Length: 251
Image (cartoon, rainbow, N blue to C red; front, top):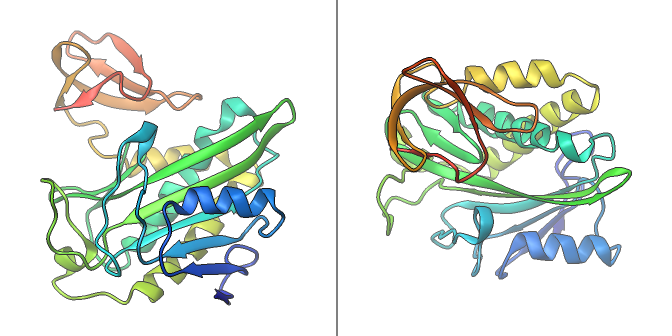
């Protein structure tokens, strides 16, 4: 089943709806390679059997309660070293859309969407195909808790829990795709600094002294994001450290 989003320029003009699938990212990649999908196409399902998080971690979602989808982008304008720019653009789009329903939505480096006090709402998994020309293909997987209210793991929440009422998933989806497109086009026009500054302003724990662990417990504050997307933390002794994914933990 296909549908077209009317409130966007190119993103979501082809939305492929699947009753069930193992992974929307895998289906999106296969359809693009088979020329059955193109930039802007979206694969969405109500039941994802083997959803993935970053580096192979599992993503669990109650069927028909949440949003699980993947969108296809071809950001040739980005060099391989600039791929975190896409992560920032997508994160900002999702955060802005959800903030129209509830307050306190933050981006948690590198790929989570969280509420400042109530826990994790979802995450993003971007899988890039890179050549010497740049990024040929980006499959952007998004999983967000919308109407689920019971979770098999701690520190999770949903838009419905935060708002105190069930949400219109399709309305949120339309708004989210429009916002993601907005920031993607900003990135394409070369406004990476504006996106980076906005990303930092909405970053969870930014400029707040907090507990971390990089093999040892320490107290520090997030002060920035490197050009390569590494988290920059200033420790209590004023030394600066850059961390790639999974090199530091929020405690």
